[in-house]
Image (cartoon, rainbow, N blue to C red; front, top):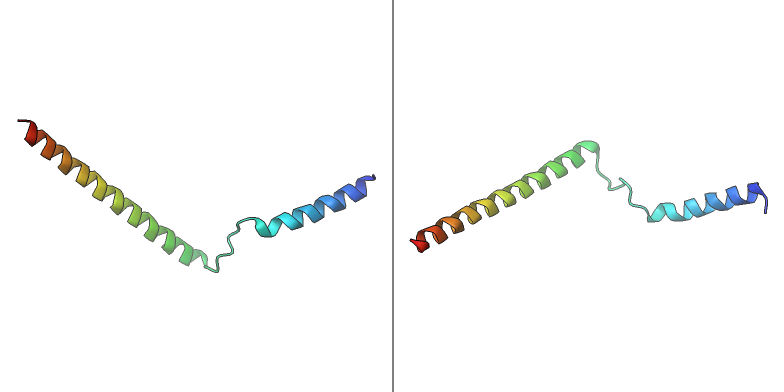
Length: 67
């Protein structure tokens, strides 16, 4: 097998793999993507804060019950 054939086959294999890879082709502009990501981050932060508050309330209840 010559080097040229191997290169050509590698190119074909790379092209075959390319559609399966996840790209940034979600149809959003960079600004829309930023807004989407910021919203997701805010929701995640709010969820963590709610869990932390719930955990603190549970700890207070347990401490009050032990007295």
